[in-house]
Length: 237
Length: 237
Image 1: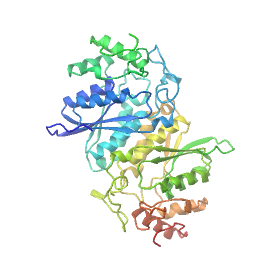
Image 2: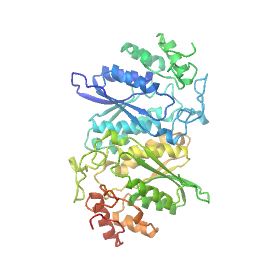
Image 3: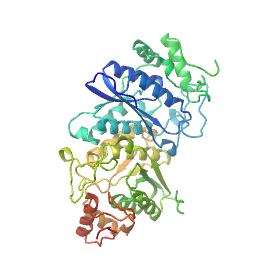
Image 4: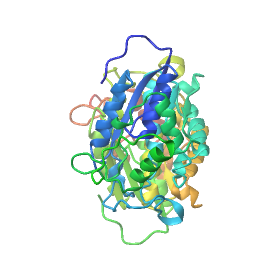
């Protein structure tokens, strides 16, 4: 847990924080909009703890009032290359499973994440939940589409004491229609140091990025198209 | 994990199983409707393991193909008498917090439970999820209302690979409009032995029910009104 910053803020938000480019940019946007940030990360048998180290770094950087890391059991359910022993695909963007859905898709992941965010938002009196989903680069993931986010918001307002008492809960996805390059440009304008972020699905024991998985390729392409120097430490430069 | 029963069933369902009267009756209904049952229980800092022992007993009784117990971190979020150090109210039904919502309400609990059920349903190719929510005895809980269940179902079909691929996911709440007495009558007709179920919020170290918490009082009243002998072992008869 990180101490609350000095000035009290009027607005509170739960921000889902993976320590990657997208959620870090979202946190920069929330901070810029003067929210008090409750940063929420998950541990669920990811192949690497480097993601959580990045999440802690990012939460401290943006002066989160609290950083909660929940150990959830999503890996016990399986069904994805990210939580199972399925190989992470290399050297291709958009490596798909059946009918265009990538093998890195984790069943109902964003639904589980947002459900915890909703529970925490109720407890810490936050009405807004920020999530870094994006329909451009992740078009194969059903739970990254605007119609999904809208449906979750509708459900959230029926699910909670807050909703019933008239405090409208909102799910905010400010990156929904941006390309990776636009996301990096937006964050760079907000003075994000992307060196503290992590994207790689398959880092080495020292936390260096593989440079070849889908997530690394999207990241490299993003920096390239944004015209911003890529600060990533790659294992195989 | 319990071994799969002999005969393959055409339909598969994830059934949320707390080991209480409602979820046990729901499992009896699912079994009666010839579903292959994937029973899902949660451990989240409940005050007692007796609930999980009942859930294991019930899952075995109904010959579940699998019984998955997920250790989730809902207690780390807090905000409820069931997961925090708030006293469980005694000697009253409908003990309320602010504006009619009971202090035993756990923020977004059913949303978190259903999200995991959705993830597991995708992995084990089940289209139906059974949940024992009830709008009669739990009218103070926002996430026990039909409009909430409908909104979750809509969201679920947008969230998942299954939904995108046209396999409609359904959230089934067959007890929604039944009184506790009607639920007990329904289960008794399906030959449920309620001695294996557990309801008490505050059992003694030996697993005996307190007989005084809201959950015990609802249970007693249910058996009484159903005209069915109450098989519960009470600490203080």
